[in-house]
Image 1 (cartoon, one colour):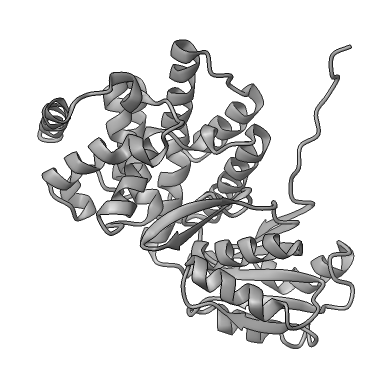
Image 2 (image 1 turned 120 degrees about the vertical axis):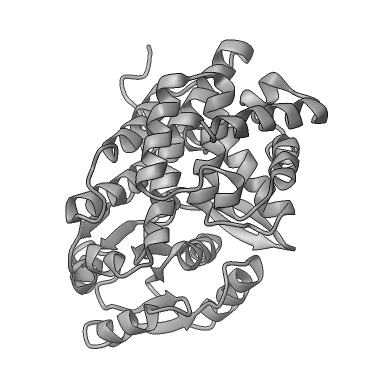
Length: 350
């Protein structure tokens, strides 16, 4: 008899609204995450300290831990600190790096984790993945999904504009990633999970044509990033949200010093990958959104030169050897990559 349904692991509580941080204590208690408020609050070097101080009266039993970077070493250091005392849960407050460190540390210790986002830079907020830097390279680690996710729109609004644009770029890249996955299905027979594709595509299409800066836009972007994380959980892989666009970004991270924020890099890679696949309609949609949100369309916009772009495209497939995308499909030798890049860059002047 076939299965009549499937179970999907997701956060049990998600709050996206203005003033959401003020409701953190009731969420912990009502959700039976921590009825007594004995939690470890993990913050970064930014304004997480201000938020932690605002929670002191509501969570008097909480302790605060500061992480200075988004590295594996910082994660291991946090693990050592958390082992010194008992906590009901770990609460990570901040941007992507802080949340990823706290998420990975809590997962390694088998502790409940609550993600509190103050920026919307990428889709790792509710995903089963943490991206950490180790020996100069970013590496993805499989982790437990946060038991709760909180996004305070008031806090998000204070973040630098380029961080919001980065979140847009990461969600927008879903469309290119899905196209790469479907290409792999047609050519190699790789199984595509329809539900995860629907979630990832819905997330990307939800932000199209919304007015930047409005509460509705920020709330929809937060929902889209969370939905992308759920799509990866459903698929059991980052496939619905990671294709050639992310391979190019990973190469920029590994070999060229991460010239831009993650979302900016993957949007840049998605535009090129979409051009390679010859998808004119998707290319037009991607290009329009990138212009509206000030995302990099050319190497110069990202702060790199043409040769660095070529080198990143050549190295991109090595960052995900088991992944089939338009780059693996074309499998161009280095000389052909240079020709393709030059042809692509010529379209920017039209």
